[in-house]
Length: 374
Image: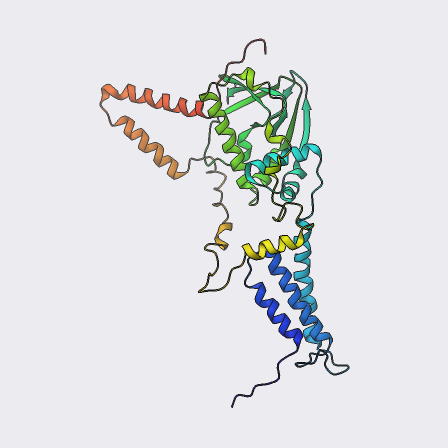
């Protein structure tokens, strides 16, 4: 025979309610917050002697030691996580130069100030070069902040001069340090020489630090977006035949300028730096946006845990510069198509392949001859 016993105390009922709420919201801050509240109720229940309903206090001198120990440990674990999440929402103090570069990252891919400060800024140096001074590129990656720089591209053996180009505020070099290419590209088959034309200020990151930054799972997408924007700008400038003289008039690209009012991140969003000042609105926003009741009402978002897959493992040292098999198959198929015609057309096919390869090179670089007086 089933016997219905006296319900547990109010503290246990509240703890159960907070445990329930931690399971129906998807935002990590809310989950940790409700878990902290739940274990706080269990802590109170253990201290007051685990009373039964409707009493708020048990027998004098009663203390549930095991419940108290588990409650303290759990409060420490979840409380530390909640505290770190709250600290992440503080406003970030940056120098004017760091803030300018952050605006570039934010406009390109939405990187928050906190992530920029912890991932990028700690490896960042601001350097200046005088007119005519050569910029060392062997071990450093640069983003131009002010000024114009002359780029000279040579073959790996330095015997072949390929082309010149002027680059200016908002552009980057050497792109090969981003480590985002799957096979050997023109950036690996050439060498660049950079010379400052005007007094220039650049952001510099060492190549070893770039390996850490560019592959960081929280910022990799931003570097990919920056690379796409860079190549897109080069191709569009070349296609539109944009005069260098007009481009060079811009001393600082608009992407570094202070945010317009419409560009400011919403104050209720995580990473805005204003969430703690509008804590109630912040909490209510994420309670609404992350509410996820169980099946059959809504269930969990599809693939929530699968968005953190690591990149494919790197090849061994011997094979790391070999072309991936699918790229090899693609090139082999193209070669077979070129050779499938008659012998009379073989020279034309080879010539068309050369032209196609040259077109690819030109589409990723603006080929502009620099006047002798520059």
